Image (cartoon, rainbow, N blue to C red):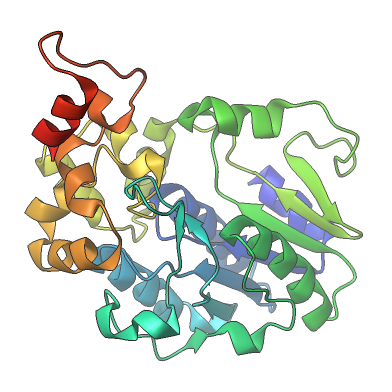
Length: 298
């Protein structure tokens, strides 16, 4: 809680990036606990980038947190057709959630509290999701007329080498030498308060404090997935290809919609995490040509 206290003591605008996953869920619950324990009469900004294609349990969890803690939150539920990378298709390297021209095959209906592209004057149809998210921080800072904005991101270095590098890399853009911070723009900083937590720490905190969490993780556990492999992310990115097939078991009705939403989903569901998808290295049986192997897989 010392890190949370430091942020609240030094920033008048606190903004939590919330995906509906275990890490951002704990991040949000930590902030809410600090507000309640200290009886602070101030709201925080909750930003949820809604990628349209996700488990219903993730949608339910996000709605639960938005509704249950609305008195503490200024909610930005963002549904924008920015570019999102996909590893499933042989014909495209990105797809767009909430693309108006694809409305008839959307995975689910637009949420009632959705903020669309017309709500953001900086939106550009060529933007990728990560570009949009960074500009959103600055836009929110100006909209809230803040002096200093702290964007709290629930990522942990244990999750991946990429995340470790993102935080451990030496830089000149720390806030007051806090190595779990990064300058985004003038008076706007990212903070990673749980960067050194382990996966076990996340679940101990949920159990100890009785916090709400995404019940999808219970089904992951029942399916035999190791705790370190349990991820809630856009289903079409490379990090999700190994577990994409679980949609068929956990939410078959959602799986049917995913297959028609983005090219190559069924193939990735079959071969995700294998050499057929270029996982680690690509090989073929000695008895086949590459053309024969491709036709066999298809």
